[in-house]
Picture 1 (cartoon, rainbow, N blue to C red):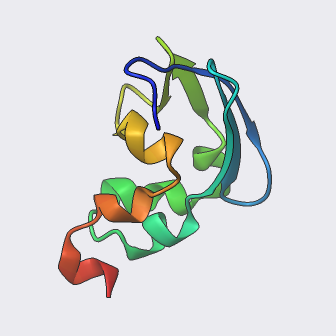
Picture 2 (picture 1 turned 180 degrees about the vertical axis):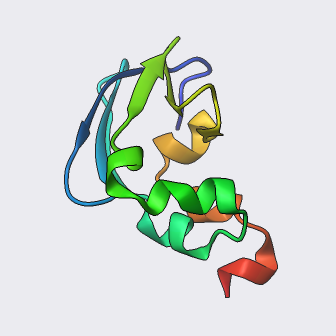
Length: 93
């Protein structure tokens, strides 16, 4: 179960497109973003397949973001490691 309010305290690179996240309730999650990025159609999202650009993430107000919120994910999806659910159904196949 996810707490009503949860924040990311720390994010570290753990491989090419993987980040290890530490949440303020003690939960930790390692998320592979490559499948999401590789299946994305929009060029602004696919641009994060560049390893240098992908590594330029930040934690702002407890959220994981890239750029000026150019790329971000719902907290529940990060907490439960289900970011592929964020893609339209026809792209997940």
